[in-house]
Amino acid sequence: ELSRLFRAKSMEAASGLPGDPEIFFNIHPAEMREPKALLSGLHEFRRLYPKLKMVLEVHESLVTDLVSMRNLLAQLRQLEIAL
Image 1 (tube, rainbow, N blue to C red):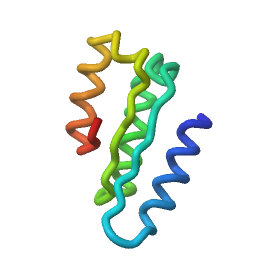
Image 2: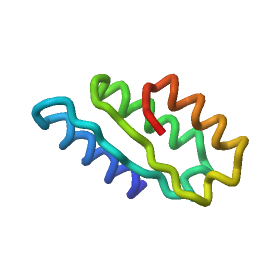
Image 3: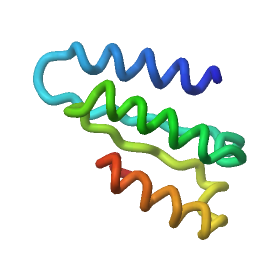
């Protein structure tokens, strides 16, 4: 929940910046234990900030779980969030 709050505040602040800002954010590996909750939050952020350029930074420990990474990547592409 704390990670989601930090992301929400960051995106809110970035959306008010002039120009075309790009916001980089990360997820904690524990958040992949409940990927539906994570993706639900990302869908909400995209709905709230449709024009904001978002880039998700992935913790190295998640890269070893290729199935989860493939699923996450597919969802991110749909949301137009870079990885």
